[in-house]
Image (cartoon, rainbow, N blue to C red; front, top):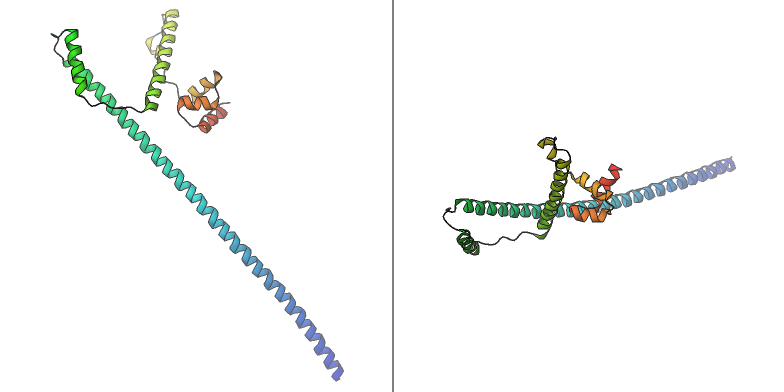
Length: 198
């Protein structure tokens, strides 16, 4: 009987060791899983912080660009106001003055006025617009000479949108970089416009 009791106790001890080993492996798996989750959380925190830093940089660049554009707009508005003031002064000049006298007075008054410097990109943009409108005006004159019965409403062409300008330039065989430089837009923006059109 003691032998049977010893055998039963031995078997129970072996079974308990087996269960202890199984519990130990499960605990090890949970610890590994916990470590993996902590590592994933750290990686997610790092990626989110990098993403937020990039967004902050983009926002800062956007704010700077908007400030630069608003400054250039105020400068162009100031130039337009100056031109209007000069025109009004020319209109208000007494008619008794001869052309020579008026040019002498105009040159004297211009020397005392402060000069306003316009940024180079605004001047280039205005110059290109003037050239485009000059080409359009010539085309309208030729077109009206060929068909004199058309009304003046049809002769007034609407200004081309950015997309239309980009498409016209691409038809002329220009690359997206050249189009972006001419229209003063981003290269990827022009590429997207052309892809959507095609």
